[in-house]
Image (tube, rainbow, N blue to C red; front, side, top):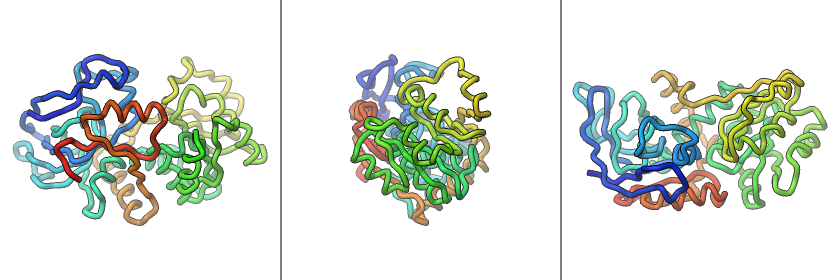
Length: 329
């Protein structure tokens, strides 16, 4: 038996239960991993609330972690006991140990701290496909990043800046504005004090921008579209403020021949080759200093409810990591 966070009903952070669970042995193609660090993501909130559906209830939340392989399935040769791996897969990382498909894990270079690996494997790969494949950021582009001081936003600003773009970021506080500047934002908008559409218009002299990376959703959707130049890209990859309009108002897109996409990491890492290439580029950029991973908040796994509450109340910045209570890192 191992300890895990379990959800028996959807709701607020208080629905988390700290319980014993049976893990079992890995089957063909699987590995068993002793969790060392767990990345917290807003998608965990969506699953906890029931906005995104799980196959079963109760369930163990969490989609991102790093740890040590403790057992492998029959005949498996691609992983061995003692390997250090990270993974962004399925559900179940809020646990002391987990079983998962071996081909959904990636080796962690020895130069990468496990807390960093756990906090960046999902967020970093998300940023990789956002700036390199979903919309390919190039020198001369101007991009808008909402929630620029968050875990994904921080990395996104750094990577877009390194690719030669002019980066505009929105944040909620002066403190977060300082971080966003450090992370490569050329212009920072404190959206509680300024209208971001007006500011973007001023910054671009009315020309608009090539792409918006929007993880906020309902509160920023129409404003984000207004910031785009003709044939611009609206990349909607989250909904922390609420779901998008349904149906999507097509006349708003048609007014400037805009593109709207709602991408998912798992469609951009569908094959093992894609997964390894994406993760490899993330780890390489960390090693080169292109990306600085901000692990700003660490909580014991048993206190995941407090971590969720702080995230939802905008008390956090950068990445949040949960550490199993039995682990010392």
